[in-house]
Image (cartoon, rainbow, N blue to C red; front, side, top):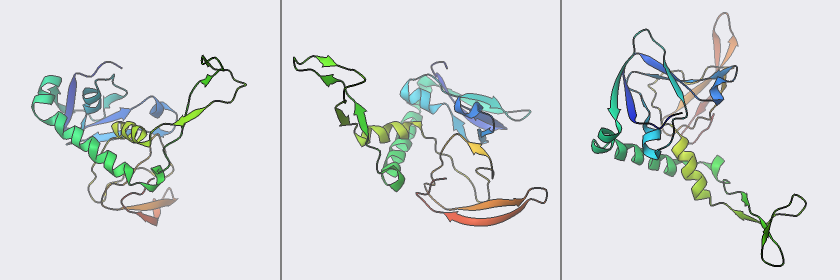
Length: 194
């Protein structure tokens, strides 16, 4: 994608956000509605956009805020604070407690020069978990849902993992498709992943 130069807020209508991963058959894309926003990540990180956003309704109105105004208005500071909030949350998620994993380092020969061959064992140093958490947090999107909203459809594939940051969510299983008969199978609490 191109370098981001604007931030978008949905004034009316809705959009569908698709990443390269969500174009796989059967994968569920993220839908955004009135009041939601997108485009902040590319502005904050000064990176290329990594998603395609298309309108989902006949008329979708967007409020566009360009990069200069994004910084001057305080929106950049607001979204940086949300990223930091996400970092703090991810540090407390038990599922992510073992993020530190070895990073591949080249072997060193007797004369001190670096070598890298497939047959030699590689020395490894753990990549700091903090760097991984920060990278993960900058890739996350915080979405707010009202009570009763469906987040993910039963029996659908999605290209992301959802973490519940606050509130609670009920999980239902579709028992009979023609009749839409559903059964509650669980309740998610903050820190739960699905």
